[in-house]
Image 1 (cartoon, rainbow, N blue to C red):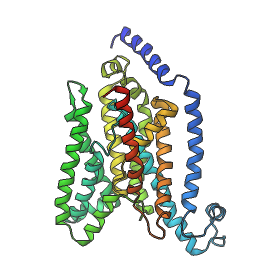
Image 2: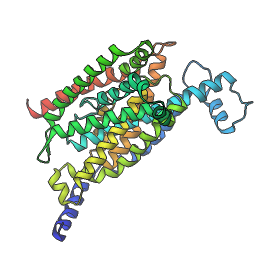
Image 3: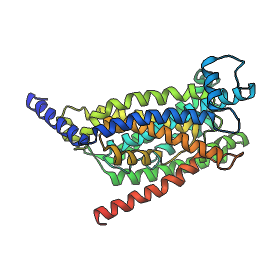
Image 4: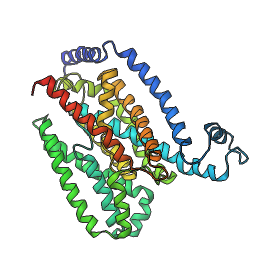
Length: 368
């Protein structure tokens, strides 16, 4: 790249940052601070909400004292520390991973309707997990022992990664990504993954069928510390890496050619984004099943408040996604108590009308 190109890129980048920031920089920063505080409150409420009568004060006292003679009974300690706490932490990570993945895909494809579930990535991740459930027993014992608790998250990660690469390959031609092709290809890939999953369900035994049913509706039940330590690191790495893509995602809104002249390594940006999204979604699906619409609802709501600047949109999406997931989980645990409603049903009931509203709003704006 020549010196003139570099200078031109610097000027363009400042223009893009200014256009994205506008008068919303202060609002975006205040929103981030508010979301951090709300996240802490949501985590505390998630840990203290349920059938057990453990109060927030008693839970916090037990958490920091570590003593056995706290106000919490042994039963409450098991419920809080072995059931609710890993569920709350993993639920927050799942919501953050799905929401941030949606924001990244919308920025990468330059389309506000892009979402890991809508374009087939979640279906590919679920297929990878189902393959491991049904066919994992046929793998060499040494391989399964070596993978241990990471077998399922890695299988879901591989399924999501392959689906994402296939989707991007189909939708991109001559360096340009076709949004229409992307959405149609996502529908086709989802249908293909569903068909293969149907074959695997036909092959599965009773125990495997119960495990597969877990994926179909999405749930945070059965979360353990082992699942948190298996899937959590993959999501956490993706959440830490993605914010460093904000500059490139801001630049790519002007087009890939303009981003290249700004000094953005577009191809490397695409690869990192693809791997990060596949890892985040794959690990999420591996432990919670298919939970849709989080990745499309959260970025949309935040763009209305803080604007499209990815420097603020990505971390805000992660925080808001985590809060939204914890709120949906608390609703799932209490709305039909003592039973538990699958969380995927709640997110679909809330997300589907919102998605239709976005379509109708865009139709009114564009006159079609």
